[in-house]
Image (cartoon, rainbow, N blue to C red; front, side, top):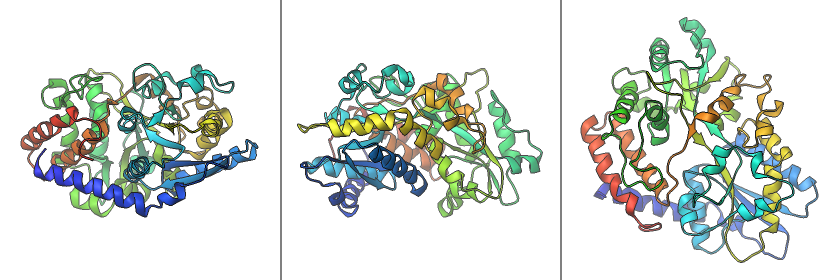
Length: 433
């Protein structure tokens, strides 16, 4: 790793310790002489409101378990909280974590696997849930480590009023890269931009897969990114980079720094915005225009593809009884718990019966086209779940951002990206933290 990469990692580790202390790890402390559990998760105010409603409903069922919901604002803060709490020997009973980030904890056996609890449950059955979401949380390839609560995908949120004003046809299932780019160009101008998208591996991945490429040399035991070595992957990556560097349909660096794409979309200054279902509770605060969701465009001669966005309830490993934690997870993953979060807008339920019910699909709450999330399920793919993947992704995103915004030349930037990321694949989990 270069000097700058080391400095970034040291800064992150330092921030983790500071955030873990400042964020109030004390509110996660409790005595085990009471039937109480602490649940840690990340989300904004709108998201957390849905989880609080679910916790209140759980406690009203009278299970004799008091739940302390201990939220943080961002995924980085969540990782910092978990890192410091595990290091201090006082982890939360339950935590909600994305499959792209749980590998580092699973590799260190910090998670109590849920497979035996699910097998013995009289409330939940494995067949109730999306098999693709379940697969993402089988760290050893066989037994479930955590139980996934959602099966979201990356979609295109669009401002229907801007489409109408520009005379652009609304997105249709199976639309092409050319259709997508044409719309983005037509929607750019007069203070608006056609597209908002984060320059990250998770955002690039669906375009790579749609074009027949791969992100890594071996999805199960990766040793390198293949962003430049595979022709199909490189073509998709160049198409993605061109959105900013050639076509200028994405806000430039300075404008994105001053106003995020989500904020720009909320005020009506963005035609399309790429995100997962996590954005919906915030987008439902929009009053000034009509918006909806559409599937991702398909590469020329390619196939439909999207990336799984899934968070799961994990139990911290240890000698204590996990009964109370599991009772909470059983409720959260049951019909009532899943319906509450579906109605909040936050999740695409991993329970297939709830996902196909009015709790999720009701057309009286935007997005009207929630069916696009279910239509994407057969085409969902995942990034690797190795112990070091979250670090690989974090470092790669930093370098990809440099290229996307033109801070470094395309060829030089991509060469540096692959060279600097390669050693991270072979690090022992926990090394350098």
